[in-house]
Image 1: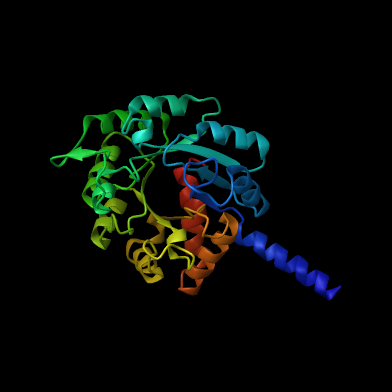
Image 2: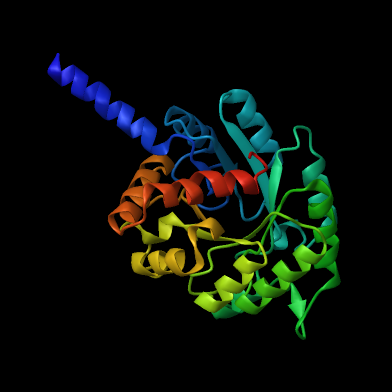
Length: 294
């Protein structure tokens, strides 16, 4: 009996650990890149652990349709779609965004500026291939404004993608001017971006959230893209958890499945001195506000 009660207690604790988590950045099959599990399993695992919501991200295809279908197959958890403005959807293409947000179910909650195809990302990786620009000569391109008009009208979130710190600042500034209230700066500490603390503080003052992707601090992360836990902790302390969102960005085959990865991420943060109240802000309340769930 004692062993049984211990098992029940441990299961309850595991469930409580992820209860209410809102993950704005997950990957799963079907995809053109290798993935650990498919999106149905992502949703089932998240629901089983008591998570509140999941956003399905694909770098090269809108996820409006798949999010709608996963919602039907896995009721009891909020499943949302998104679109990333890479070359496969025509780059910064307002028509692609307009169509994605119009699909039945209205699942799209985030529009990402270009990610792997972003000019900044391609140049940082020293790749010789076409890219998608968001700015030229220090000014955002007109098509960026056209996309922002749709984001503002739909009252959904704009994410900066893999843009440079200077581009991030321009994107956040113009988004605010155009009435967009939900803005997130995508993983500002990765090698291709590396925002400084003052730059992060500046976008935070303008009302943007900064997204810290937990997969990058896991021991299973690719060595070339692994980030230091202490850099995350410093950013949280110096910018403030009220301006931060922790997501998983999980789905890569070498990493654990999303729910197990989340437990590892939370344990790492707690072990580094991040409080439960700070985690509650960054992993539950702030992402819920971004998705319009508050």
